[in-house]
Image (cartoon, rainbow, N blue to C red; front, side, top):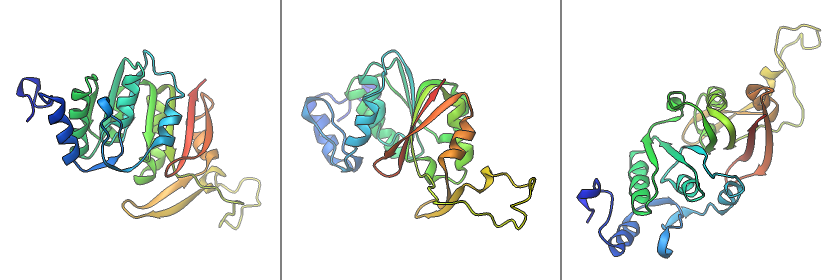
Length: 232
């Protein structure tokens, strides 16, 4: 039973907390205090290792597509001053709020998508894991991340890696064909949930973030490629 004096989020005992954790359906395997683990379908050790390399101390952090709050909890434990987690799934947000209350970590979780990011201002660290490749407006999402990043960002997303670029424009050899080179460097792929989505190339992503940022590909992540973006 939850303690109503704590907004229905705090369990009166560790045993009650652990019992609740064990009755929940989880996507991620999350390490909690006192040796408790959520029984998730996916272990995210590789992502955790990448995030642990960042200096969260005193930083503001937004975690987009936070699921049940694993990376938000990590950021707060590592000393972040302010952490906001966003997700469109109300169940995951409820789980995240209960976890943060019982882990005694002050984190703000919002039932919201990446589109609401512009309302929140800028953050020292932006975390966006496996979100962009599952929305229709990938390029718009990248621009939202750019505008929200005052320091650095960790982004896991699908990237196109064509061996060569070909144009369907018959005048491609003309000095001024009227077709941007950047307009041709991406791939459309079908996603089982999101329909057809765009996989931009690293060149196009760098163009969107422009010269104010450096964009480095860290290699294959858990599901997609991992990018490290740093404002110069």
